[in-house]
Length: 357
Image (tube, rainbow, N blue to C red; front, side, top):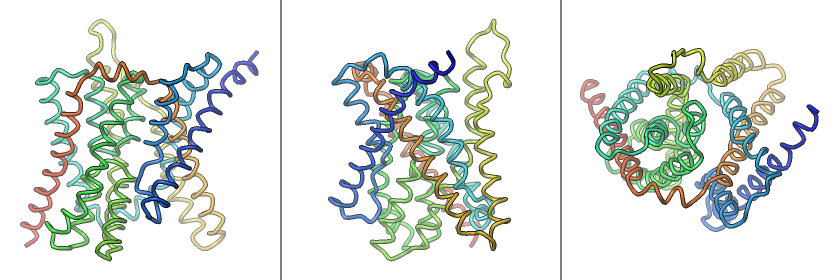
């Protein structure tokens, strides 16, 4: 009986993996073959969700796939987030942490305040506002996907928020490297901090840093931007439980609320993976370093595969008519979120330079 329970999940999981494979292939063709980049600046995850939405809306999904797709977007997603922790090395963050952490905190608080005001003004759905907020402030699609289960977001809300964040993230990725070079007079540290703090997705930050490096021959900018973004990603540990608490606190006056009941325990797995990475680096730094680095790379790859599969599954389950019915207002919030992060980031860096001098 238990065996059959798990076997019925296989068709949907396999379908999600097939969509991941197609997305990776399309990404390689578009990013490297057509655009000519060594590493594609386009997110495989975004291609996956678009492919999923296409197939899910053009064709009827058979019942045999539904349970596996639901399992993928709930449980395989969480496994992908846990594996994501392996790429974070907090000991490397100390060099930029004194500047980056206050900068990130100020940007997060500013965006949350501004979006809170917009929610009241535009009257957009509460779940949508939470997803766009965390996507704008922490790490884009990953943050949205990680937050969605703990606030009970609907599939169409998740897809809309991801499309929102991806659109403005791509715009930032293409514009900010050139703007930052002009504004900061080619200073690698400041440009890297700006790119790492103001652009939503880790892949988009890496792409923006790569664009800058290729255009202005500055590998230091790419390194600073990447490290700053990884510091920003660690705020998932704080933001997801915080959003879970804020969301569930106001759900029912009759229901007694407990942080224990809604705490996203997969975040503990994420933290554990960060610890494993740093302990492993210390133990295997001289002996068996190649085996350890190969293991780390494998877990990183698994994380990307699991997360992309989850996004493909969400795309398959998304009804475009439902998204259309939500209107333009959430995109206004997404644009304002992007602008707020950029402006606050510039202002904070200017303050840092003022007090430094």
